[in-house]
Structures are given as C-alpha cells and as structure tokens.
Image 1 (cartoon, rainbow over the protein chains, first blue to last red):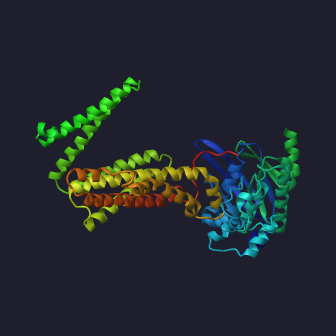
Image 2 (cartoon, helix red, strand yellow):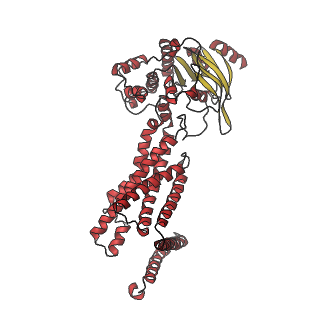
Image 3 (cartoon, chains in turn green, cyan):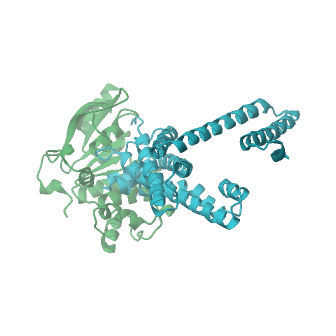
Length: 239
Length: 265
C-alpha cells in the first residue's frame, strides 16, 4: 500500500476545508473557515489558546461533526468516505501521546491491525528507526520519557501510511530538548516521505521552524493565511 | 406464646409484625439516649415498610384469583420501573432508558422463560411474580453498575478512545477494554453473593422455607437454584447492556459522543 498520495496524485490541494463550522451549545468553536492544504506542504495552524485550533484539527479528521461546511480529501467530500478509511488516510497525533498499555511494537502495530494487517518485526523496527527509537520494539510504554512517548505516537500514526498527518500541539507537554527533537523529526518525516502535515501550535517561532505556510486562528475564525515569513510580518505589524 | 394468644393466622402475623416493630423502636429509643435522634425516622420507615409489603401481598392475592397474563403485566411494569431507575443512575449515557429496558427484559425475561420452560419455576402467578421480581431487581442493579462504570471509564480514557478511532479502529474496538471493565465490575456483587452463599449469609428464602418446615437440604438446593438464576440473569443483562452501550457511545460517523462537552483550543 502506498501512503503518500501526494506524489502519486500530483500537485494541488490534497485537503480542502470549505466553510467549516462547529457550534456546540450555542458556542462557535470554528466559524466559517476555508483553506486548502497543498500536497507535500507543512501547514502550521497558530493562534492563542481557545482560538479554535484544536477544534479545527478534530474537524479535519472528522472526530467531531461539522455543523456547517465540509472537507474534501483529494477532491472527495469526506462525508462520503467510511470514517475508518478517512482516518487511516488522515492520521492524527494528539497533544498527549495516549499510548496503549503494552509494548512500543504493540502500539506501532495497532493501526494496521485494525484492518487485519500484521506488520512484520523488520517493518516495525524500520518505522521506529525513522522516529529515532531504534531497538525500542520490546520496550514497555511505561518506561518511556515524554519525548520518547510522543515519538512512538508519531510512529504509530505513520504505520498507517497516511496521506496527511495532523499534529495537535505535539510538543506542548515536552521540555525544550524533547520539543526541538520532535520538531526535527516532523520536518525529517515530512521531507523523506513527502508527507503533507498540518500542525497546531501556539508558538509562532515553532511554526517558522517547521512550516512553509501558516494559518492564524482567532476567536474561532481564520484571520490570515500565507507563507510563514509574510504571516509573521503581518502579525508583528498588528501587535 | 403469640400462637396461643392469636390462633387466627392473619392476627398472628400482625402481632408478630407489631412485636418486631416494637423491638426496632426500642432500639431507636435506646439510641436516643445517646443523642442519636432516629426514633421518628425509624417509626415512619417501619410503618411504610409494613404498608408497602401488605399492599404487595394484597396485589398478589388479587392476582392469584385473576388470569395468568396478569403476572406478565406485573413483570412488564417492574421492568419499566427498573429501567427508569437505572436510566436515572446512568444519566449522560445516550439511550440509557432504552438500553436498560432492552437489557433487563432480555436478561431477566430470558432466564425466567428458560426456567419456566425447564419446569424449575412454576408457571403460576405466585411463582412468576416473586421470582421474576428478584431477577429484575438484581438485573437492575447490575445494569446500573455496568452503565455507570462504562461512562466513567470512557470519560477517564476519552483520549485513548479517540486515539484508537484516529488510528482507524472501529468504535467497538476503541472501547473494548472499558466494556470489559464495566462488565466485570457489574458482576462483582452477584459473584460475591455466590461465593459467600452459606458461609457469610443464609438467604431469606431458605430461612423462610426452613421455618415453614421444608427439609434444610431441599431448601438449600432451591436457594442455590434461585441465586444461580439471579447470577445468570444479571450476567446476561450486563452482556446485552454493554453490547448496546458501546454502539450508543458513538455517532453514525463513529465519533465519541458519550463525552459531549465543548472543547476549545
């Protein structure tokens, strides 16, 4: 199975949000947000706490249902796709690693196992090497540091060979050293696999280090989107 | 002494009830001397208990003279009341009332039907209603525990459930460990009852049978049958309830809906 539909399906938006809305109990969490994500790019979603960044990311993976608008994956309305198939193709790494009890290898195998595929040992070892955890297969997850656990959660998402990887503030609970390590990992994985990534962060400097474009959220709405240097200049001018 | 004073069985029963009520009141009065004020509460509870149980006895008496389908009506009413009670306890679980009603009726009703078909329980109003009520009551407690435990397990592990969904797991697979935990927790009282039977407690049914002259071994065996029936009914009810709730916890688009609060970020 080939994961990176980006290269195979040519240029253009791999993912496109169109007038996305999410309202819960009269409160708008995401309000009329539209944007494309180009194949192979790393897009940072930035903004202050409570701006709707994580809510937007959850909508992209259809973990919540939009109350308005929709998302297109390769031009197909994602509501027409079976949810499990959509989530295999659009992987997600949560803010905290949320590893399942057991070993690192068990976590990496989880996704493929859901569709009856048992990853062989060498493939698991290969994915773990890619995320900087060689020889960690048999390690119980309780023995991992925060940074290692987050690397395993990235490896677990990669094992599904997604077309798009969504990352919800993956470094927010990590120390400075682990944070930089995860940033380098995301950059390397995106480059090596030509993987399209959407990463939520409240840290503009992190967005500048990882992403090519940035989308600024404020009070549930999209305020600005563009290449990171331009967005940084515009944000600096506003503040 | 009472038997000599009250030869009429009904009068004797009332005299016995009055004596034990006086005993309970006596204990409450003694407690009052230690500034534990419970006399009024005890008096009300005793009076209410006596009225309620006499009312049930009167209903049973009426049913005894009525057709057999009246027992079915009574049992259906009990299932409804049990489902409402459970749904209140499991507030926040989507479809709790429907799940409880289906689980209790299939668990308690299924076991009762098998027992009647096998001839273990007589198909008479006087057997069906009391035995059925015991099965329904225990099923109600078990399903309440199961739904409550499932709700708290899923709430505590919502991140894991959604991570599993995000990795392409089915809703059933995503909550499977929490369904198992809920099922096991809900059966703890029934299993403990079975384990401690005869060692820690001698149930009321057996005591009553022995007091009314049934040979102790025969009473013991019948009591075991009833307790085992209660266990089977609770287990079947919980199996049905946990199967239904794991589906109800998700939307059609396989999103976790059991945790419905607004998120921001």
